[in-house]
Image (cartoon, rainbow, N blue to C red; front, side, top):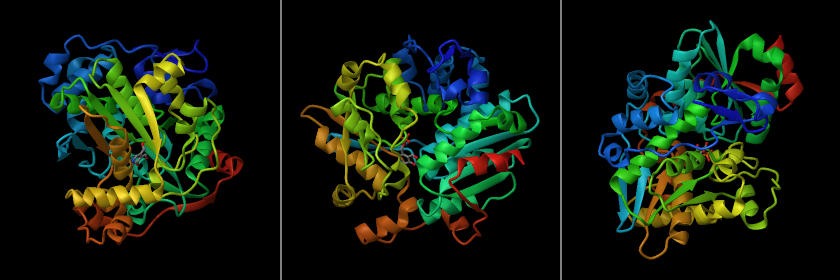
Length: 422
Ligand SMILES: Cc1ncc(COP(=O)(O)O)c(C=O)c1O
């Protein structure tokens, strides 16, 4: 597989290198010029999820690893269900929260852990990552107790739900967690600055597990084919709740290799840099604001250059396939209530995708909205908005009374870099 640095095109790497290095020189993202279409789409759609996903990833990495190895990795990574729940005649929910940490991040993080374990030649590797909530838990659990791998996770203090925090800040062992006095964009900045330092990279053998890591994105492509295997329709519309835009990027890759999805709706909360960009053609991130869908409180989404690259940086082409919507917290709560009236309990991120889909769906179209987290992960909001009692799944019951082991730090990049060099 040939990946290019989107900032410095002369830097080219293969899949293994891209996974281990995470990000390229000058913070450029690794990406492919154009993904080749699948030649055996119908055959692939007839397969069950793990077999189909193995073929898709084998295709995406252009056969760089033998099929059997990919199949073994996918089998270990995707060890949970991917059900679809019909809401109305033309609206269905794709539930991506049946993994160990109850969010869609389990797909990417678990596959990435398989890749790092397989490709890493060095003894001590450090996975350094920022999380707006769910990546942290998925990465921490995927790498927990793997020998030779140390994990450092930065998250915005007080800006993720209590249970989200408990899921990854109580593990200890090879998992270190840092509560940053700032927002998610600060955490991303600190991670990027650490990667900018060759000295830190060398000292820690740094690898990133953010959605900038290509292995995570490729894993996420697979579940879009699950939708298509159930709803092979010329008029299929998929709505994606978007923060850092990794999930949307994966959906667009699925379309580029042949998933017959007519168009996507990317729905953000008040952190609306992308929707404003699509309307006004100017990229002007505002200061990040806190919302009820906190994992999407991102105003400078890292994956956007990849989305642009998929459309050769042509905004007109892009807007024929992607429309964007912004939902306020009030609209999010209303959507949660609408779904409750349809006998479906959803947390805020999922409800945002539903709201965007309903506003965008035209007659004759089939709509699927992507559910990215289990309602219990945002139990305070769900119980308050919907006046219901949510039963905690086992994974959350086990951690809810454990001690938080995080270290609180400031959002000072220089200080964090100095600490890493100590
Ligand atoms: C529950 C949930 N929904 C949606 C998103 C947004 O996904 P993306 O950052 O890939 O746009 C996130 C990201 O952390 C999330 O945790």
